[in-house]
Length: 459
Ligand code: URP
Ligand code: ZN
Ligand code: ZN
Image (cartoon, rainbow, N blue to C red; front, top):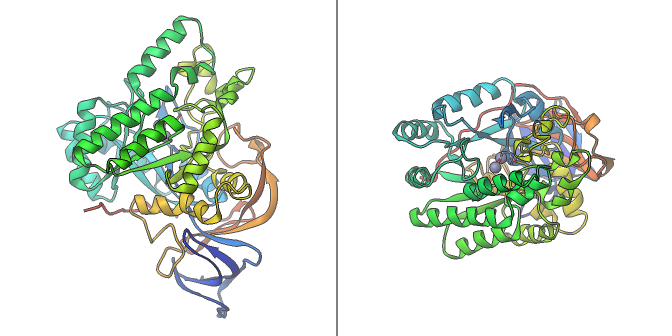
């Protein structure tokens, strides 16, 4: 059914104006004032509301075998949660184990998502081992429309790659015109510090931070950017958490390295104080890189506003507090790493970024949608509102008031790191390629309608 969104204020990364939006099939076909509604069209009244392009989360782990367990969401629960929170496209990290081939990993992640996702999605293809066989398979995966890789400089013995593999991966990516996304922490420093802390009897969740201080991340960023500089490869630093790491990324950019930076809603709003909560509650806040000293939050907010940081993601990695986090009850190195946030990213960024004046409305759209579309080859099909773009739209009610409660969330995990946090505003209607998927906080879309998006390389 054609869709007409009337009387809203359209906000993109570059514009803000009052107009109606006409969508036919899966696409926006017309934007003008006072569009007449033909019979049979579905009309959405957006009076007093913003109309944003569908938001994009460039870094999630819906499916993730990790640290002896599995992230809790399925593509059904994860995509519903994403949509309720205004995210219409997500990028999941396809992370094969070192024992699996790239092709096996890609097939597994595709099978997890196909027929189950309600929102559109793509993958960053994890390169967790590099050899001749992997290279041949990666070429095929890129040809199938996956134009970004994911590498880990951390997680020794699991996803982490060594420097020869790093070099070869960046070289292949440069040849293919592929962006390499990277988890930047020096794995040797992490490993040695973990051993020392445990040997000293320091085993609680708050030790996670001590094992991975800012210098560990800064070294990772410097390491990656040096290799990328040598090879001319385009890179994207995932989940950057602190000033020290940002300084290394900015220094690389000044040297001409093509580097984009992602931070997370968690780093903007939470701190390492949270990992000190009593009764093992600190484990809810264990992720890597760790939550930092709160002084880093101002640095990251102003880096977003000034364009030094391009995107805000979630790194959504849900592990239950009741059964999974306690795997590390007597050893912090065994606490499954991750803090869920897929459902709340957009609302938190709006409430604590826009309404507080830390970022303006256009920057909000830019960092939560447009930049991810541009960096990863989806723009202007996604990430903006214009004729010809997919009709992925978020009618956002800034007058809505509520708070975050794990008991009512759609994410399949038993806690929220933002329990009780007040929200000012939320999506009242969300559309995916012309179909209404969310109304007043409830999922009304179609499970399995989400598509794997083929993305071009830079070639
Ligand atoms: O703690 C985190 N970030 N968990 C998910 C895996 C990763 O490193 O992105
Ligand atoms: Zn990571
Ligand atoms: Zn991640």
